[in-house]
Every structure is written in structure tokens, then in C-alpha cells.
Image (cartoon, rainbow, N blue to C red; front, side, top):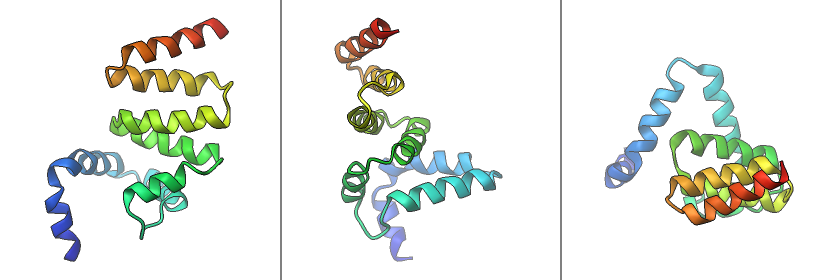
Length: 126
């Protein structure tokens, strides 16, 4: 019950995420288990969100970052998609999928000039 006040305080900000998780996990136990396992690997439940994100971005575990990317992509959090793609590009600068995904995230945020530059880089390599 102590956590209810925190949820109510951030209701407007968190409702989008709550709605996503509620619909995503409805009747999908294996998907729920996979997401929870991934989240437990990358997020310390005692850390605040900023600290958890900073710690996750220090890892070189591409599978872990990719799993988190897929989660925030499905939720439509384009800023976090951009941040995670930037980290993936740092780990593997030649990975076109990461650059393309970052271009999509930039485009969704209205950062069209940056997105176009990345799209062109991907196109030239192909």
C-alpha cells in the first residue's frame, strides 16, 4: 500500500506504460516470464530509474540491451530507443540494424535531419 501513493503521484506519466504491460502480458505467461527475466538481469529493484539506466548502459551485453530496446520500442518510448541504439552502435559500430533503428527512433522524435543522415549511411553501405 505504500507504493500506491507513488503510483498515484505519477499516474499521468506512467499510465502509458501500465497500459502497455497490462495488454502485452494478458494471457501470455511465457512472454511475461521472458520480460521479467530480462528486467531482473538489467535492473536493480532498489535503484532509481536513472541509476538503473546508467548501469545498464555500461554493459557490453548486446542481447541484454537488445531485449530492453525491444521492450521500449513496443512501448513507443523513442528517446530510450535512441539511447539504447547509441549504446549498441558504440559496442558494434558496423551493425547497420542498430543505425537504422536509431534513425527510426530519431525520426519518431521529429529529429529529421539526424535521422536522414543515419538512413543515408545505412543506404550507402548496402
